[in-house]
Length: 142
Image (cartoon, one colour):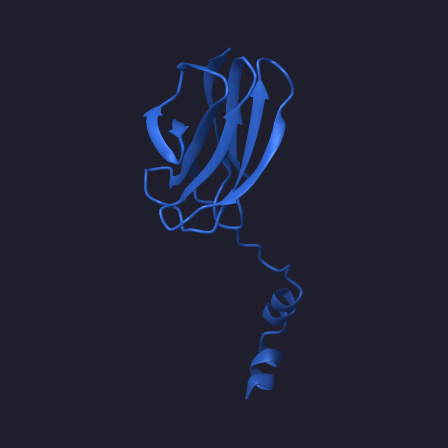
């Protein structure tokens, strides 16, 4: 009977019953953001825009893909937060988009001021995946 075993081994039972709970934690899976800026005419992406110079107004797609550290796709439904900064000004939050089945999220932005435009995409992470971020830039002139 269980009582007999516990009577024979009281030290074992006592130490087991008073031991602290064991905390088990797994490392978060690493992620990275791959990003591309596209010049948009009407609704068509016509050329890659990183590092290029455009007249204003110019519409840009900030297209990012959330990937695993080794380049695989992260499951859909992750929130990407987009930011913008003109020259060395303060960062403005543009908003958030949710990744699709290909782990893509796209923010469309119309540049209306001349200067250096920098875009920043951030995944804050979740219970399974570590956070990451990516900055992309281009120039706009009048």
